[in-house]
Image (tube, rainbow, N blue to C red; front, side):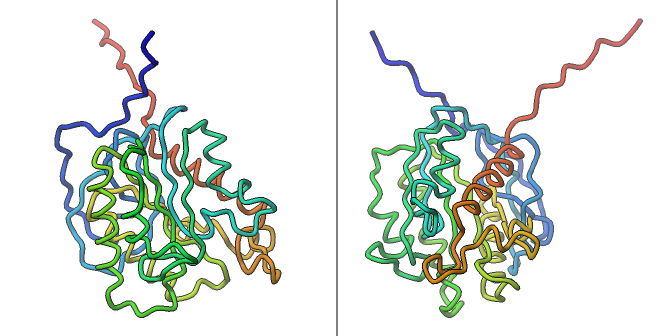
Length: 265
């Protein structure tokens, strides 16, 4: 008896409609996938001149989809009472994904993590056989203390490698979330750079900054400011982040098909 087939979430072979958009209007754009309802409002003002972008295709990730969630300490689950109570594990359980969580503390596009290298170095070490349907790349605020020089080039190198490694995967970029308030200027700059670069590729981009996921009203419950938590999401914060990301992904998923009524004679 042959095993059941995996849901076919691969990107269609046809082209997508190219749209001329200014960077100020590329809120929430990101990779064209086989999934999405209406474009999410998630976005950041991109601090670049990227003008042409592709409209992201609908993003629908059914249960059983093979998903890679890649990022830094937030993806690792730092400050949760148990790392498996981190946002990445929660969303995988909630949506019943066949998920691989790859979070390395301290890692970024320029910043090497605790034994895990930069994002590009870590991507080079990923298993090609993983063959995910969806890749979510989170972060990273770990680059905020480094010079901006070379940042966009490092992001481009990492994303190019990811596309080569998993050419059939759809990709969603989850920008950095603030660990302190007010948002640090370098974190805002990173968010803008990532939004612009994702838009230029036609990738879905989710901006916790633009969407105000963490604000003065919920900061105390979202972020563990103790010496142990070190300004990472608390257990409660991770759960909230998981649900916010679920909502963002739902906003990318296909809308119900509307069947037009036949005109009356």
